[in-house]
Image 1 (tube, rainbow, N blue to C red):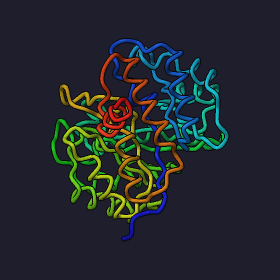
Image 2 (cartoon, rainbow, N blue to C red):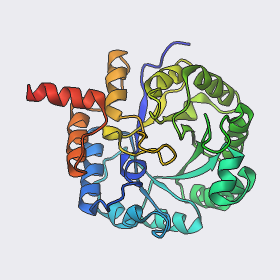
Image 3 (cartoon, helix red, strand yellow):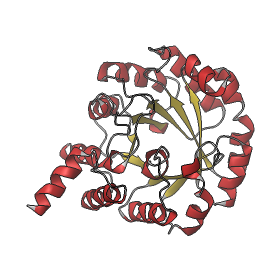
Image 4 (cartoon, rainbow, N blue to C red):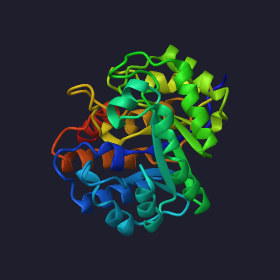
Length: 302
């Protein structure tokens, strides 16, 4: 299959990238991050999470952040909502899209939320229904689609089953997420091809972590199966909580560099993204993990 001519990038650094930071990132910095990402041309920014501050203290300022950001017309601002209370927060914050989630791994589901995969997704039925009734987009995220920290290999049939359940909930988009970054290109092709058989590939996205250095190769493999939506995080923000010291999300700068080399359009200002990555890494007092971003920044300093 020919590669897509245009790819949609969902920028996840404000939510997925920052949620595991030990020290609280000031709201002013988060607001500026979202605003700068919007200005750089991202069509979709995952901005906040309406979860209990007890569980994710870093995301406690979601309502304030959503109230303060400068919204760019045409940009989708997404928020994670685990339940109806989270949906209330999302509606009050005028989010454009809610994100619900379920694991493809039975062991992961039991270990994390003490219920089966089927039960976990059934809990989202009233959330998805209310969100759709309010005119919000609904996105379903399938975690551990290419491997699980507890059970190891995850059957492709399990990924397809979760995709079917999300489709039944009316999800506009479904993410296939390699939560621990163990996927390799052949497996990605197999999984994406199988899910594409039950869900229109135009509504499927790849969310690849770079724990084992496979994310760019996996994105290319997914594009070869017709996928044209991918998630990434500036400066590679977001560690992998199941692999000590490992990188998490693939760096947006690296993805954009590769896509630019393939003449694939994204509508995003690459140089602005390099600046954002370097700025955010400095705010967190560390060097960013984007190889392309760091190389270009070094070249600029010459």
